[in-house]
Image (cartoon, rainbow, N blue to C red; front, side):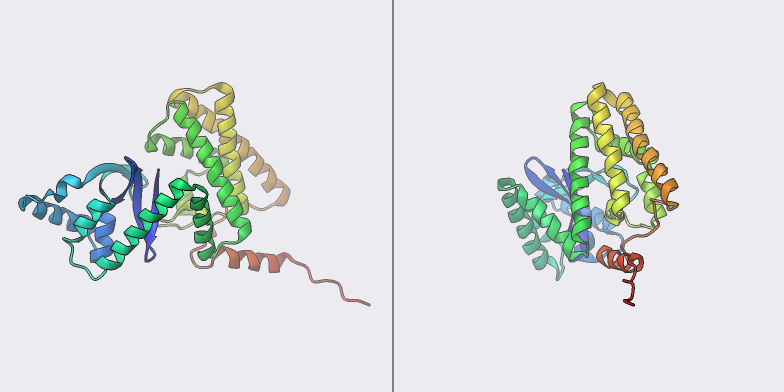
Length: 287
C-alpha cells in the first residue's frame, strides 16, 4: 500500500512495508532544506555519512515509488525510526515540527490497524477540509472501494507489480475516455505528480471511471483471466462498456463528459454551487 501524506501542505510519498510506514528520504530533504535539488542534497549527505562510517546508510531501504513521470523507481526510504535519525543530520528549523508530524502519523496508523473505519473517516474529513461536497466525497469513496476490488482481483490473477497495474489502468481509461491517465492529467492541466487525477474529476467522470473498473472486474471473474495478456483484454472490454455508455450519454445531452475543469483555482463545492445556481430556474411570478 502506497500513498501521499501532507506535511504543511507539502506531499510526502510513503509505502507500507514490513508492517511499517517507510517514507521517501528525498521528499523529506526537500521539505527540511527547501533545496531546489533535493536528490542532489541527499546524495551529498549520504556520501558524507558513508565517509563517517555512519550506520545511517544501513537503515535505508530501496523501495519502488512513483516518480514525477508516473513511473515507479527504486527510491531511498526509511521507516519512522530511521528517518528521525537522518533528520538529526539535517540542520533545519522545521526538524522539530516534522518529528511531531511523524509521531502523529505513526499513532494514527496504529489506530487504523485496530479500527480500519478510522482510515475512511480521516479521508472523508481531509476531503471536506479541501473543499469537496458530501455528494462528491460519497462518489470518490465509492470509487476507491471499486478500485480496491479491481486491484485485489488483479493480484489474484497474477498481476502483482505497480507498473502492471498502471498499464492495465491505462487500457481501461483509454477505452472509457479516449485518454490514458497521463493524457487526462495533461487535458486537465495538472502538472504536478502529486495532483491526483481523480481528485479533479466531476461526478460523471467519477461515475464512468467506476463503471469501467467495475466492468473489468466482472469480466475478469467471468472469464477467469490469468496473466497480463488476458487481463489486458478484459481491461479493454471493461473500459469499452463504460466508453460506449459515455458516448451514448454525450449524444443524448450534446455535452462532453470529459471536461478540462479542475479544482485548483476553485474548490469542488464552490463549483458545484455555481453550477446549481446556473441551472436552477427562477420560480414563476404569481399573477
